[in-house]
Amino acid sequence: MNIDIGIHEKHRAEIAEGLSKLLADTYSLYLKTHNFHWNVTGPMFQTLHLMFETQYNELALAVDLIAERIRALGFPAPGTYAEFSRLSSIPETPGVPKAQDMIVLLVEGQEAVVRTARSIFPVVEQAHDEATADLLTQRMQLHEKTAWMLRSLLEH
Image 1 (cartoon, rainbow, N blue to C red):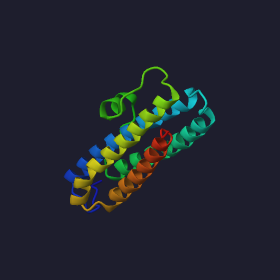
Image 2: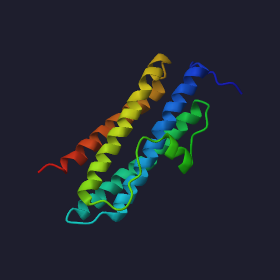
Image 3: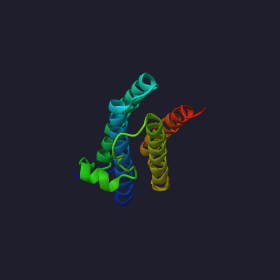
């Protein structure tokens, strides 16, 4: 059945492509954060273990919202490690970094998600896709705040 939500198919496809990258970044950050939650050690263990848990739980909910928006636009959402690896701007972290390095890597991941979300706005605005704009705005606010909180842990 044709989709007639007031957004031209070309724009829906471009937005879905951008959201697929956002989904891949969000999932990659989720996996990295969950990994660090499991493997953090040191004097900040309790603080970081709990903070990372809060963050990965939020990211787990976010991937669903992003994937559902892609589907609402009429396109399949990526859902494999291979697709996420190809689409994501967030590199995997080999081994188990020190707690301080985990924080830095997560700041970089949070900021990468913000950049990806921001990159979708031109086509979203051109298409007058307020629903996606709202989703992007909420995601950007949350990731910017989380990056700030993580950076605060690096202050001496």
